[in-house]
Image (tube, rainbow, N blue to C red; front, top):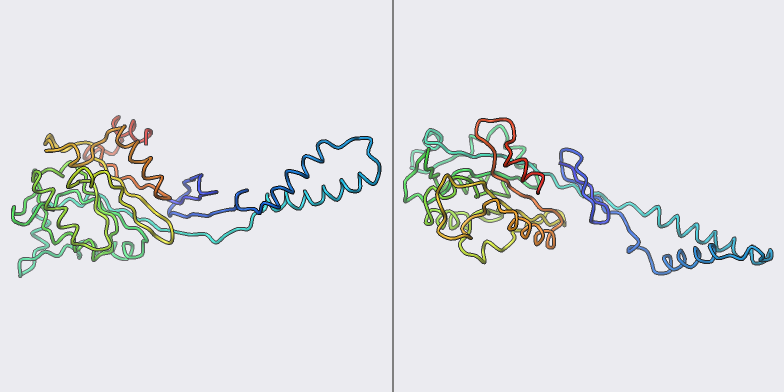
Length: 287
């Protein structure tokens, strides 16, 4: 995705990367230039047709000055373009056969070789996102695949080591190990430096905090929501983010106030179906 911003306001999607180009507005001009433009325009518009040649000469000089000011306004100096690259990996879904393949002789797990084909892309991106589909609910629970997943905690340090910056934890498997599984996964991710994990929360204050990451002087806020949790109900309304229009609207408004861009991880869609469903379409256009 390539985004070009003029005057820090407009956003235009163009292609494969994120680019921000700032151009001067009237606010960037000196007061003298703005005053010269306004006063000069007023004199020109109210000129008396009966004025003599001297007055016309003065008016011509003023028009020339106005023209220079208007040219300065219409041709602001171009500033250097800032480019922030983004890449995303979806559904890091760890079935039993996968974590067994990653197990080492000492009982630890190394999933990094499974990303070998995209390692360079992850490292090269300024912002690398991954959807951690399955919960890192705590090794003490034992590891499991479908239908109630629990992924080895080594996955967190593996993803961090690969260079991922943003991790979504709000999926339909977020509650597979209940409340304690959520609290465990938060503890696991908190041990990792320089990586943002969001989507499930310890308390209401934690849920209401907007995660923000900066790259090249630009601030990116990161929000995450899921369509459901396979019929498992959370112990508290703040435990994770479901799709709720009022909540999303409030979150995005607050995020815009503290960042240049808002990144939203939307966990939705029908499995093994390549067409968007009604739920997806309604919320896509709403967002």
